[in-house]
Image (tube, rainbow, N blue to C red; front, side, top):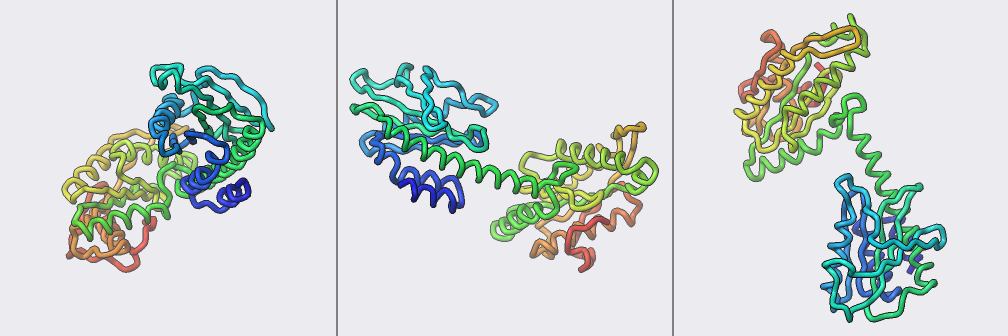
Length: 345
């Protein structure tokens, strides 16, 4: 069983597969009536119970879900009694000492073991028995080994997710990186073409930004870029995706947003940047921005490259008209082929 669990932990594509492998054999091998597994970072709880112990399984879920405080950390056990077993901590906790307890004749015992990876706790493995003997030392040794495997597996998944998150974020501004914008663009395009759901794309470029770098240095330019990214994120909704598409250019994907709504937002962003004095080491910087808007309601937009090209064409028109303005793309506006990818103008 441990060998099969190790194989699943090494090759799993996600936490569900790891938990499924654990539930396939571990509770039955240990003789548990109900079991639970918690991951702290994702605040997720998985439950297993025997067919005649669904009520207990629900109680396990409630108790384990309550083990998180607002910061996402584990709360201490109600009545801890810790004991070291093979470098892991097992906690035998008298059960049902709160309003959730079962009738008094349904006594049993509980065993919990922390799941750890790299010296940090990543979760809890929890098992319960009813009308049965307490967990034996052999049971605890098996659980300790399984918990070590599970902790390593979940730790590996969290590390992979962290690396993915880093790769998808622009290192300077913290908004989405250029390549990460492809996913929300594809998602909104497919939804819009299939169901007619509105969506819009904003492309924006800081006007004469090279002057900031030339006169004040790149440190000042970086400070302005970070402040602009923060300002745009404050102006948009949580469902909107803000990304840095290159240099001083940013993009915003707006789900469920028609062209009129997108124009209003674009104008608000333009006005907020124009009146903001951005603080840098040597004083203040004032700057303006040009924006191009393209909506999926535009019949000429049939794929992501055309959508980007349409917004880029509108942005180029805004700059040609004198900058510090918002221009919306219409089907009659030319969209140059070379603007089919996000670029820094």
